[in-house]
Length: 358
Image 1 (cartoon, rainbow, N blue to C red):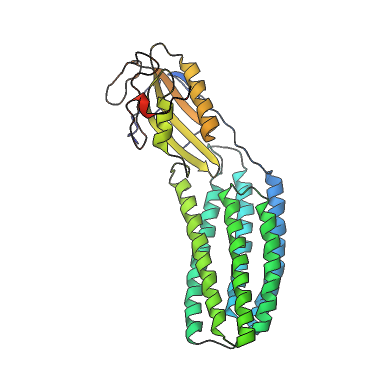
Image 2: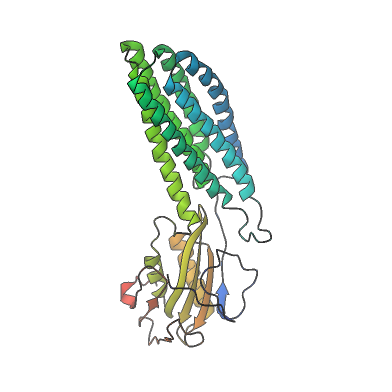
């Protein structure tokens, strides 16, 4: 990205951490649009997560008791995983309420990123628990205790039923939110863990091979590590204001620069305020014959239709009114003349390198 220039009257540069402007001064054709879809209502999400939480708490209590009686690390690790499931859902519910607060004071986007912090915390707890169960599992592989395989098997079957029901409830919520997805990943991994534990219990019950229980706990730990890493990676992208996954800023910039009358696009920034809430800002220069307002509307329609970006801040000026960082003014003889986009990963200097979305 090109380095932001100092703000001057009539100019918007860079992106101010996604701030929503109360008004825009100077320049031509400034504007941004808003619109954030949510397939399932927040109240419905909370009810679904609350139902899953009740199921998990009820079963977890009984599993802890049975795990101790059966001397099963696999059952105890599953119970601990269910405890993190419950914690993840509680955290998700709290984050949803915080994120729903309207913008106020210095929080110009509200508290939307509370959901991202919740997802990061969920990912971290999965990884820390995985490390602990790897340690305990290795110890039990070396010195296996007596395990009541039959008790482990039947308890695990009940756990599978509970997790299937909880997974179904959360899958109906808005999983485009990393916050909800974090809770769902907890539950889904617990389902896999119970399947692994049931198999281990059956092996111990029918063959007496006690190390199967410890091996199952290592499988659980591996699943926890995978899910935890995925949550930390995805939430980290949002916190570092990376472009939304699957979106190439250079390709997007080229398409903007390839539109009719557009001479140059620079200070292009695209990021996510929260999961499912992308935002974009850019400075656009149009040729002397172009209508700044028409160009802005055209670019916003492209961003909304092709990329799902509805929160945009575009400063649109005529060439010569506000020269670029290197002093170039440029000139466009016709609708297919030289175009330039700066601020994206790759600069495109000719319109033929970019799709022409007429």
